[in-house]
Length: 408
Image (cartoon, rainbow, N blue to C red; front, top):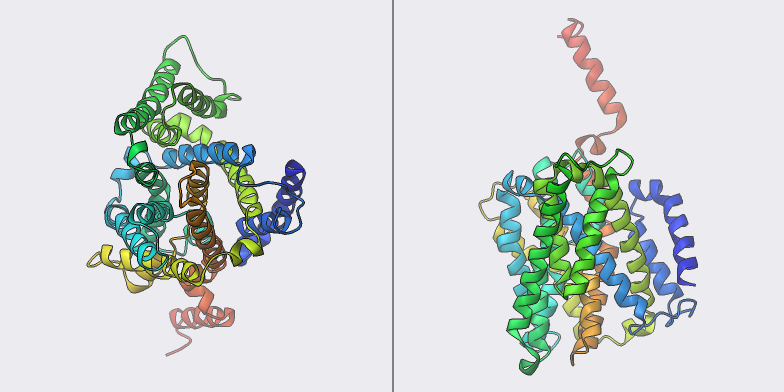
């Protein structure tokens, strides 16, 4: 039934995608809403529950694909070029967002400090999908688009170690094995670097070469091998994915270019499927279980945490007020936060259900608010959008007349 529902919603999303690109309609909202409508707590068409095996498996695969493609978009060359503004957003904005969110979780939602820091790490990353009209609009200043694109591509991976550590701390001191945690993290990083380097060097020898038809599968094969080796060795899959993506982008520009479009389509499909499943875990009853303090926390997480963090980060940065306001607002809580919340739910820590409720509410509000305002804000940067069509014609006519001596 899950496959049937996904196929139907996917076809509908494809059919309305052109309209969604021009309006406040969002395919992400469509999948989330479909999941809520079809979920066990609403109509019961999808019997997916938090302990269903498909939830963890799909979340793991989707986040691996997303981190792999995110890393591939930001090789070292990309990170070195025009790094000043993204560096501020990541070096100052990310930890400040985490800290402000954690303070709100502790003092408003009443969580302990370990759980508060965990929810701060979960909600710190941003997702460019829900601000696509802004990132993909040529009328928006290039430095703002570069800032949002690089930031959202890197912060999923940067937030991950914090999620891992704070989740271990929240599980209790008895369960915090730093040696095992360090081995898992270092193993993931090693796999993510060594396997892509070996594969790229192997292809450069005179004995091997990928045909044109199979070139897009090269990156897929590297990612799949990293996933498989990570599973066998119990290394951290997500750090391995992010490191592998950056490694391919750095040492294999041709592999990166041939895989880019293919890989993004795969990641997009997995993301949409995970959003459908995530929505199926939410229902009107689920949202009604959240206290008023939880709703206040979600509002603070969206309207205060990132705006305050980025306002401090961009002091004396040279960004004009319009660009800074857009960067402060477009910190949508997206797919990485969804999966990190599912990982917490699977962990079984004492506050897992509370954290999942708060994160789910924040993500739902963020998806609705950010994906419905990206087109509006993008148009604010389009000078022609604010000018009637007749004004442009009149201006060109007057300009021609002046050049021809018709007007004095």
